[in-house]
Image (cartoon, rainbow, N blue to C red; front, side):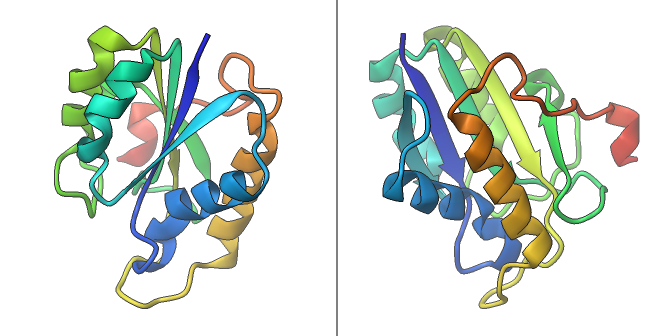
Amino acid sequence: MTDVLLCVGNSMMGDDGAGPLLAEKFRAASQGEWVLVDGGSAPENDIGAIRELRPERLLIVDATDMGLSPGEIRLIDPDDIADMFMMTTHNMPLNYLVDQLRDDTGEVIFLGIQPDIVGFYYPMTDAVKTAVDTVYQRLAHWEGNGGFASLDVGENA
């Protein structure tokens, strides 16, 4: 069984670097049996590589504007991504990525970290660094939803 951790974001854009920071931590000391794919700001470039892995579970981690307090973490139903207004700095909408991988993946889990400041050359805020640490620590013994709450679609209104 292969589990893939897809980290998404741009480390030059403040809190949007949550995914790349998680990838950096994971490369330094892996947690669990995840295969890391560092998608950066163009995760669609990794669709072929992820398809070849045929993961049982694909965990996508990205800074996502959900209208919550900075650093809050939520699971987002992949089917809701297209319907939500979600901040993205990526070339393609993430629902496109999910749709492309759905047939080759057992389960797609989208984990959003609420950013505070997203702008070129801004430092990452402490709240987002703490959130990344939390996600990193839970990877080793991930079961089900990883212990994270799901986003109530009305919560981001």
